Amino acid sequence: MKASDIPSETFPIPFADSAGGGYIHQVPVASQIGITNGAASLTDGFPPLNFLPVGSGGVPPFGQDMNGILNQVTQWTRWQNAGGLAQYDSAFSTAIGGYPKGTLLAGTTAGVVYLCIVDDNTTNPNSGGAGWIVIGTSSAILNNSYTYAPDTGTATALVATLSPVPTAYVTGMEFVVKTANAAVGAATINLNGLGAKSIVDQSGAPIIPGFWQAGDFLTMLYDGTSVRVIGGNTISATLFSSTNGNTQSLTNNNPTTVLFATAGGSTNFGTYTTSVFTFTRSGVYAISAAIVEGLTFTGTPGTSGILETRKNATPIIGSHITSQSSQASPVSFPMSSTVVATVLAGDQITIVTNIVAASGFTAASATSVSLSITPIS
Image 1 (cartoon, rainbow, N blue to C red):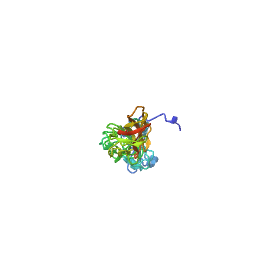
Image 2: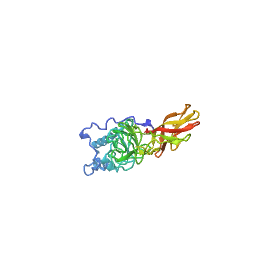
Image 3: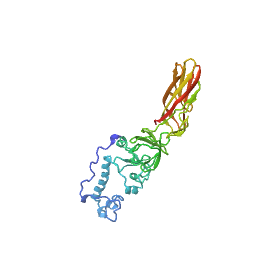
Image 4: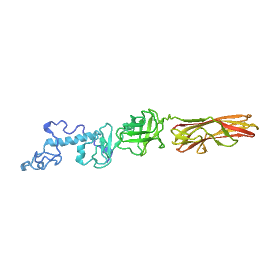
């Protein structure tokens, strides 16, 4: 069969559309045998009496029945000619034993179309019945009405309502939420009343204060356990910053890990000792280190100072700074560097410095050693 085989005639109106009450009646479902002799029904069609000669006790078919059945059939033919879909009908569903797999029904919400994915389905798709999925319409897809909702909850308990209603959290499902509040730390989200799920960052780490701002459009993905923020957030987290102003002795041409703090502690994304910062959250960070080196010597001028930021004892690319001088003693080397690095939970940051005198080294020291770390994502 070809597309060109489509009938040229449609039903702009049902058959017998203007028939008066005396010339048409609804053909009932139940048999009319013994109730109205010769009357048709959906059960019997035209009864046996219609097929007997009148002289043998037969009853001619009622014209009203013919008008009625053709009217009923062509009403639905007209609706289908217009591209219309049926809506869920509980009585009809019960009568046929449930809708078959592949059925398309129009939802009670304009623009929503449901596809039945199981046989014998008596559930109502409009109320979240099982065995139905929503077929996306082009306008709804373009408007993101299936995947976007504003947050109506609090800073620690987000609430969003998609339309139409998803029936469950499904691994891999994505949606966008416009936040009502800035992040203040650990948070959950409850989507369409399906239950609160923990929100984590893309790596699976807990949310830190400032991870998103009010009005951010968060792209979120359910990973089977938690809801991950995979984009759209604007971080304004409190940075870690520490400076040790004490004088730290250095020896000639001997790389030394220096102390950036006078005591240990913790932040939203890591813990630290006086010389080591350990990340507790994976992400991308801006890492800045600074130092002032001082050197005295008695030999020929020609000195240099080196600053390096290391991750897990390996220099971070771009963090190596070298400063050289041909001045006579004493010499001072103020140095600083900033790099952007991707880290994993457990990664450690240290600051290493070195100072070199060509000859006649007397003494060297480091002061104003500082480390600052700012979350980017």
